[in-house]
Length: 369
Ligand SMILES: Cc1cc2nc3c(=O)[nH]c(=O)nc-3n(C[C@H](O)[C@H](O)[C@H](O)COP(=O)(O)O)c2cc1C
Image (cartoon, rainbow, N blue to C red):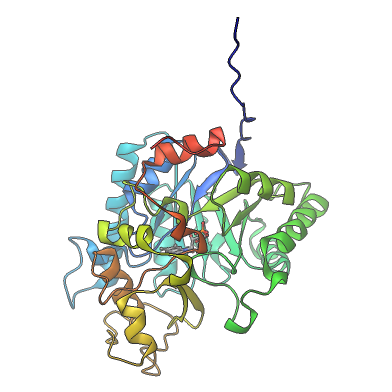
C-alpha cells in the first residue's frame, strides 16, 4: 500500500486589531489614486484579510470630478461610492481606508471614512497627530499609524494618550528599503540597514510587549511576498503584515491593464527613485515618464487642485504634478504616467486572482498555472 504525504504548513494566526478580527493576518497596503479602490479592497476582505481603499485623489477617475470643478467635494463622493461598492461585494469583510497625512483633505477623508463605517484607518506620509480627534465619533474604527522608527511610535503614542486617552490599535512599520510609493526617510538614509524591518520591527515589538503587554500589534510592510516572508516577519515579532506590491497584478486591482502589464515586463533594473513633490523620495518603475523627468524634459507640471500641504511643483515650480502623473498611469497611459512600485513588484510573471494569492500564501507553495 502506498501513502501519499502532502507537506502541511501550519495555519497563520488570526490578527486582532481593536474590535476587528482578521482571519488571515494580512492587510492590503493602500495604493493611492485608485490603484486600490473597491475591487481590490473587497476581494482581500473576502479572503479574510484587511481590504484598504486608498483615499488620495480617488475622485480623478470618477464621475464626480469635472475638470476645474471642486476636486475636494468629488473626493468625498468618490469615497462614499467606493465604500458602498466594496460593502456590496464583501458585506462581512474587514474594510478600511488609507489616508495620507500630507494631503490637504486628510481630515475630510478621515471623517468621511468614519461616516462610511470604515473598520480601520491606516495613515501614512506624515505622523497623524490629530487622528483620534477626527475619528472620535466612532471608536470602533481602528486607527493604525504608519511609522518608520521606534521614536515616532513612542512620540505618537505619548501624545495620543495625553490628549485623547487613546492609543493606536496597531502600528504599521514600513521598510523604506523595499516599500512602494512615498518612503519615510530622506534620500541619503535610503538603503541604510538601521531603517530596515529586520532592525526596527524587533525594537517596536519589544516596546509593545514591555510597555503595553503586546496590546499594540506591530504590522510590518515592505518586501513581503510569500509565506516565507510572513514567517520571517513573525520571527521578528510582527503580528501581521501589510502587502501592496503582491496585489498589483491581480484581476481585482483597480488600475488599467497597461499599468499591471508594466510590472510583468519589468526587471529589478527598472526600479528607480524619484523626488516626489511631497518632499519625500518615492520608489517607482522606469517608464517613459521617468526617463523624460530624469533628462529634464517636459512633464505635467500644472497644479490643478493644490492637493498637497507642501508641494515643490506648486510652490517652487520644481518637480511635477504627482496627482496627474499617478492618475495617468492608473488610466493606462505610461508615456505621461508615474507608476509607484515596491522592490518586489517586478517578480510578477502573470495575472492572478486575489483568492489564489491567499491560497498560495496559506499553503506555502505557488498556485499552479
Ligand atoms: C502603487 C503603490 C501606491 C501606493 N500608494 C500608497 C498610498 O496612497 N498611501 C500609503 O500610505 N502607502 C502607499 N503605498 C505603500 C503601500 O501601501 C505599502 O505599505 C508598501 O508598498 C509595502 O511594500 P510592498 O509593496 O513591498 O508590499 C503605495 C505602494 C504602491 C506600490
